[in-house]
Image (tube, helix red, strand yellow):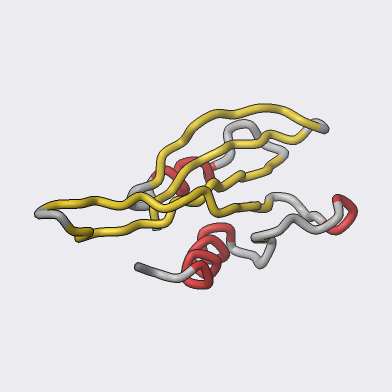
Length: 101
């Protein structure tokens, strides 16, 4: 199982900046585009009366000014990452993804 820090580094590479947050800072410190993510539980696969595989699930929220940002496709290209929904808040587009990492 990979670490949260490895996920942080991967997201920073995709975004091209360090505007990636595990715990969101106050709104006045956010610079867009940015990604805010949180832990959403662990998925465990079992066989033969034992656990053989375990993945942590994270919810990722990509916040941009552009509803058609190329970052959406980059996020969807990540292994085990799926787009869930988009909503608008404060004139910013929020795209929510889930990823097993």
